[in-house]
Image (cartoon, rainbow, N blue to C red):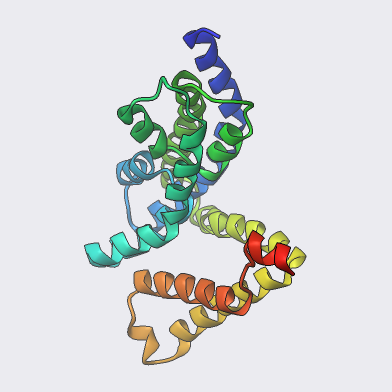
Amino acid sequence: MSSKSAFLKGIKAGLPICFGYLSVAFAFGIFALSAGLDSLQALLISMTNVTSAGQLAAVPIMVGGGTLFELAASQFVINLRYSLMSVSLSQKFDKSFRLADKLLVAFVVTDEVFAVAASQKGEVGKHFMYGLILTPYIGWSAGTILGAVAGNVLPAIVISALGIAIYAMFIAIVIPAARENKKTLICVLIAVALSLAFHFVPLLKRVPGGFVVIICAVAASALAAWLFPVKSEEEGSAV
C-alpha cells in the first residue's frame, strides 16, 4: 500500500472518532467558558492536551489558582493510562517509525485511537497512524472552539444546561460498567464516598480540588485492587 493510500485509510478510520469528539469537545468548550476562560484559552488547552478527563480536571485548578505541582500531579494520575496504551501500541508499529514519529503519534493516542489502531491486522505504518490521529485531533479542537464561541452567544440557561453535558458523558461511561461488574460498582462507590467526604467534612474541605481528584482516584483504585486482586495466569492455572 502506498503512503498516500495508507494516509487516506487512516483518515477514513478516524472520521467516526472525529464526529464523536465534536460533541464532547463542544461541551468542554462551554464548560471552560463558564468557568472563566476565554475562547482562545479553551482552544489552546484542547490543542495541547487532547484528553477530556484531564482537561475537565485541569480547568478548575487553573481558574482556582492551583499550583503547578497540583496541576501536574492530577494530569499524571488521570492520563497515566495513555502511556500504557502507547507502549502497547508501539509493538504494532512497523520499521517506518522513527522516534519523532512515535512521539507525535503518542500525543494523540486516546482510548478510541488506540482501539482502532490495535484492531488493525498485522503491523501499522506511520502514514496510516498520521491519518488516524489527524481527524480526531481536528474534531476535538473544532468542537472546543465551537462550544466556546457558542457560549458567548447562547442564553445563560442553555449554557448552564450544556455545561453539565461533559459530566453526563462520564456518568454514561461508568454506569454500564458498574451495572455489569460488582467490583467496578464498589470502586465507584468508594470514590463517590471519598468525594462527598472532601466536600462536606469541614477539615477535608480545605484540601484543594486538584488534590481531591488525585486522592479519590488513587485511594479508590488502590482499595479496590486490595479488595479484589486480579490473579495472574500462573495463579489461575495452578488452581
